[in-house]
Amino acid sequence: MSQPLITLDFLDTPTLPTPTVEATTHAHEPSGAVRVNPTTRTGRTRKLYIESYGCQMNFSDSEIVSSILFEQGFDTTEELEGADLVLLNTCSIREKAEQTVRMRLSQINSYKKRSPGMLVGVLGCMAERLKSKFLEEEKLVDLVVGPDAYRDLPQLIQQVDGGQKAVNVLLSREETYADITPVRLNSNGITAFISIMRGCDNMCSFCVVPFTRGRERSRDAHSIVQEARDLVAQGYKEVTLLGQNVDSYKWASADGTEHVNFAQLLERVALISPELRVRFSTSHPKDITDEVLHTMARHENICKYIHLPAQSGNSRVLALMNRTYDRPWYEERVQAIRRILGEDCAISTDMISGFCSETEEEHQDTLSLIDFVQYDMGYNFFYSERPGTLAARKLEDDIPLDVKKRRLQEVIDRQQLHARARYARMVGRVHRVLVEGRSKRSEDQLSGRNSQNQVVIFPKGTAQKGDYVNVLVTSTTGAALLGEII
Ligand code: SAH
Ligand code: SF4
Ligand code: F3S
Image (cartoon, rainbow, N blue to C red; front, side):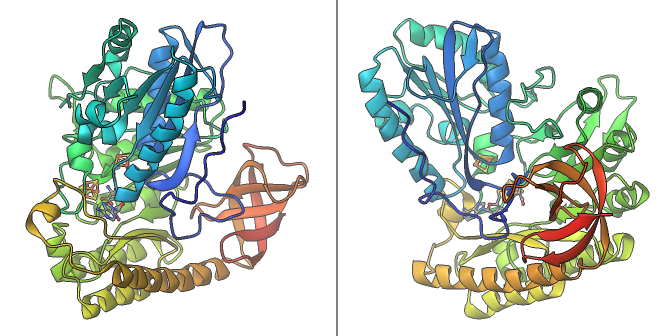
């Protein structure tokens, strides 16, 4: 029997562009996407089915997990039916994300009943949040492993093979998986993500990530640069440096003689090759420095796109959110971007509508911030209380759902207005585009992105995946640019 279609309609849907034409997975975006690692056929004896939810961090971790289990005699499979080990790498960011996994687990249950040898494990943020409670609540789950414990998987699987249940949800202050090369199963061979840090120390009051991912730690700068070099040698043309808060990247060598901050790391990666594009995500408004912006300005190959989540446009709400900046600070950072990188630098945001006690006027402030910045893109959500967070403990989730949803829609509409205008201003200009592959629209069209991360679609001519081409943009759909190679 074939595997049931994973229906996406009950998932968290991001609000903007995620162009229906050619969506690229966003580094930071807890998107609605589900990803299944593709089948490998290397003659290994056991089959691993691994399905991932949440952000790029999780998708990257799933490749590390595949790497670890590859060493243990597992090939990956896209078919749930017939898999020996089924792993769900889960997300806790909003309630809906967790509901999705629960529903999926009940589907998997019916498979497990038909194939008694099948082992089922839960990884990632939900595993960390719920720990052994998962084993009580979901009887079919054999294995619960948190994001810092993947090295322990071989041992845990042995335990499960021996008929026991197994849990490891220990968080670490050191683990960065620096020495494990992820098997890049999901890659297009052109663009890749490199995790440069793990965890988060920020304690935004709404957010579950510090609890599920533990303390912030930065990965060895040399291992990052080496990974980027290896990717270039394999033909990759773009890397995205990944972390919850990349601007607080800070690494020192063991002997204390070498210190590297984010601007310096960015520069080291940019210097590997002028043909390598460098992106990064996510930037926290409190930490993004002029040094980072000047580094971006100095290097043509560092893409001119900054994801700078504001969360709210009102200073009182920002204080309640424990974001540690206020509106004037945020506006000043945006002005610094415009001053140092110019009007063309793209800026995107995440906004939360209907946070505890948010008034109508405060919601209007969020709309006016959107007008002030004129964002290129936005990932907007309504507030979802997460157990254990500061907000859940100290504040009342008092905005009715219909009000949250109405405010969210207003945020989305306002945001889209500006996104369309930002696309429109690119028409009539020539863009350097990295070709990522065939357009989903048509066999004869290629698709890629410009420095600003906007999708560009054009007739293929003689260009190939991985080429840089100059495209004269002649029109826009509002979510993609259309043009032709010149
Ligand atoms: N480290 C990133 C955010 C990672 S989570 C940053 O600080 O910007 C991605 C986004 O999910 C957040 O920016 C926020 O907008 C949203 N989010 C996080 N917790 C949420 C919650 N409890 N309810 C609704 N949205 C939430
Ligand atoms: Fe969550 Fe804030 Fe950390 Fe981002 S910076 S992951 S929103 S706690
Ligand atoms: Fe990512 Fe979701 Fe965890 S957004 S860090 S997988 S809670």
